[in-house]
Length: 307
Picture (cartoon, rainbow, N blue to C red):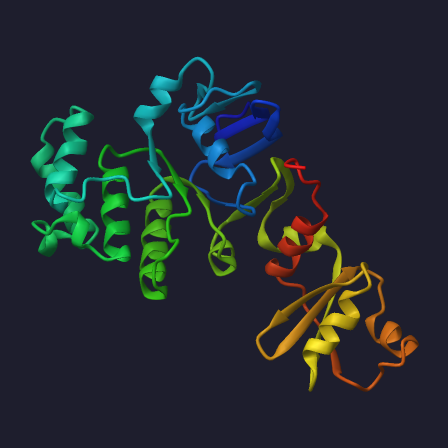
């Protein structure tokens, strides 16, 4: 296992009862890299993150996180990792500064006043340091949670859907902060459902029903999917979606005032429409396949481990 990787795990498996939630998962993330961890709800992303940071022990598999064995060195991993959970996990009835002071005390940090002051300044929280956490908007809670994660200067940041429910400007500001941290050498694994956020990552890993289905840069993931995509425009798009979608070979997704249709490379949508007496009903234009087209396709074709 290479020292170039902050995360290097193979065959990771976790079961709850008879259900396999993470199934033979292997993933590598280089140091200083931002890796987007994508997949539908219930795909095993959170369980994987918890195994990586030592909160859950895998039932099978092996690997290292920051050079430490995920099975035997969980305590050491926890000291060097920052984990931001899906839900806000700090105290609503404490102020911003009091929450950070609590976290600093938990880590037994020396010079914690200076450390807290620097964190407040870096995340733009100084002017609100006395405000109760429970009164903050989603974006400001996000900043506080990130400040708490970074307080002990971790080498790896694990972010579990950190921007869910946050407005576009707050999301943009958050990603600027993440890229700034990565430029300083921090490694980031971030789970997200937003395709614009996925495109901000250096690499992607897509998991569905516990299995890794695709990995690589956004361009590589799109190329691996080998899809052809068309855009349909015109009147009666609901009818277009229904007629085309009735044939299982086509993946049909409404996109605003258009409909996107994807299929395996080599498929011929204009020819199919002509053969079914639908030529000329709508404008059909070949377009580049996007990440969202790929991920919908991957999810639709993945075996459901809940069945």
